[in-house]
Length: 178
Image (cartoon, rainbow, N blue to C red; front, side):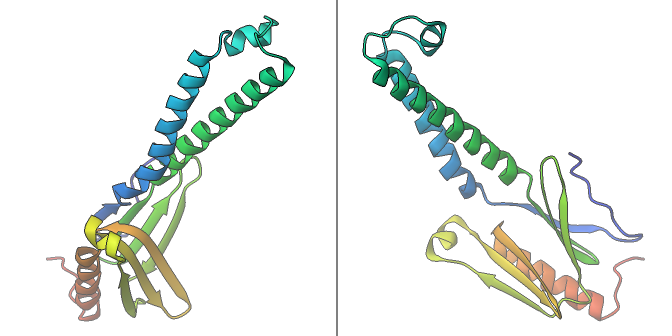
């Protein structure tokens, strides 16, 4: 996926942000726990999963075989879901340009949400206590008939101030070009 965005003539990127790293903690922790649990389950069994599929008789009954296969399928599904969530999180980008606010996301398909700075009327910021500790927060850019919601932005105060200063510059008619 291309990480580049298309810019208007005489438009420059003023600020580029990614989603905060705290979003990796939950899927990363689940991924790590499931890998450990999967290894413990495999090393605890006297026959491996492949041997069971090949027809080697397990030491337990058929119920043990069904439970082991079900646990393995659950571990694989959780690992795949965690990896997918990490990939999705890693593709989110937020941009403030000299003319627009842009939010992009997507791995295979790409989605872009943008708003012209001339249309933006209000910029709201929300931080919970934990988000203040992690120095992240949510930003909402509100225009008549539309809202752009940016979740878990790094340094939301800096992001908001950049948007506000670019809004003021654009509304004053200063293009920033020589």
